[in-house]
Image 1 (tube, one colour):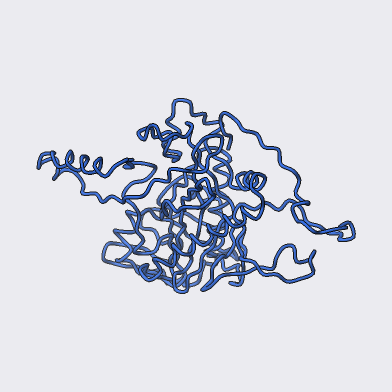
Image 2 (cartoon, one colour):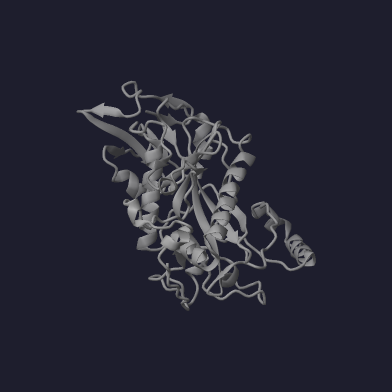
Length: 389
């Protein structure tokens, strides 16, 4: 275990294994900075005991402030795990705060001039902030006339070698107002963050502003065909891996660390995915009971992959809702249709948003297999004035 004081370390001598054994039971001492969903997952986990303050712990789900203040001063034993890499970075704001839209470069120059008119006292008091300029996608794919983006979860357990897991569930976040470029100041049109949308005058907390990613995949498949959608999700897989590889040499790898990332992806009208941002501290606050249930499952599977209890063999390609998508190279699986075609076709081991509709056990009932789409039950689609989750 580990306990921490500012410049003084104290380590338990009776717990050098992944989890302490007491009366034949596996005991993991955990510390949890944030409350909410992750705290619920940890405190309800069999054999896990919460510690407070400077108590000795085996597993710590910490907040960014704790990490910055304590990581470089801490000594961790072999089995200890923490939910961030030591030099992880994130944007200064979240939940849509600090986002501005401009049409012309002149607008930005005018904004800078206005900022320069502040008094020296105001400048000294204000926190120095950096901004990132991004091109606005003017032709987003719309659902019922509304803009949306996707939140997808990726877990990294190592950067050297790179080992990344993709969670199959996720959601689309919809705006509450029909899309238009006539007004760039209407945040309810352009910003799909739940923190923004739930303040809209007509927001209904019972219905929320989310679609399950499985629902979106069904909709896109019915409208555009399975091949187009497969290509779209493959391109998204490439975005996840390419972004991680781009920072692989920067992140300080540490065997004690793992990271859960929240990817925000926007689709344009040509079904091309665009990376908006990668959140190193994705919000785990639920917007509905259904959202809570999904995030609870995801966090529970996240802890399962960390495997404090040492239940895994290390060769797993799937753990709960996660698929191992990269392990120092692409991870492949046998095609799920190989038993029908009598071949061993390999495909990338990612299934984002996929739903298993059926499994054929008796091949004698199959007369012809010319088009796999013939097995999919037609989907009835409804356009609603307000999108349900």
